[in-house]
Image (cartoon, rainbow, N blue to C red; front, top):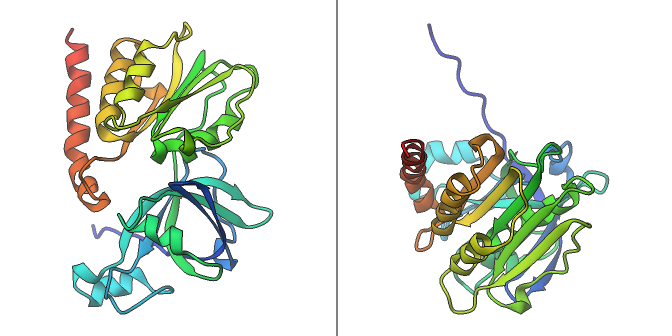
Length: 281
């Protein structure tokens, strides 16, 4: 039997409406335009899109047909994908808000966001997503670094009224804190990294915190090293079942997104071996 061909993914086209410097290293870009009509976001708080950027010297710019380019151009000239969490989707205004970590000329999406101007065009696939705070959980545990901050910020208003929640966000220093206002029952802790390695202070703070009793609904995202460490803690010490966990390495220290996506299968296998080791105890 001949398998049906996969439906062609169509990239949405959006234009920059405005930008804002939230902190010294966080840039907000608000997108709009007719290409966002019917954008199906809202179910999850960790919705994400995959932005498409022409590589340097490629000779084309948005709008373009990614599939057509892949058919006629060598791989090194294909659009480069970068994944970003949806900070907010305003269906009434038709505006999509994305927040970008920006460290000078390092990376691809950060410098683009810092230099973006109203009217600039960008294409993307999505949204994806899978997590929103459960109304049935005993309590909620959310932890992440700057890359997870947009998803955590989006989740705060969706934590059920009156529910207990412990939220931990690691940033470089106090200047990177954002004015988030948690609801009653939600305790937000900013963890300042300073000169330490990414995630080390965050993992130590979570492990030493006084946590509520019962089984939490868990969201832990960010740099892969500390995410795996906290996943072990959540599984072994808090005894949280996998179905109540949203845990993922958004990025890995020393790897580009392209390289990290290629490595992530091995990382997932290592995480699965952690589960097997715990089950064998």
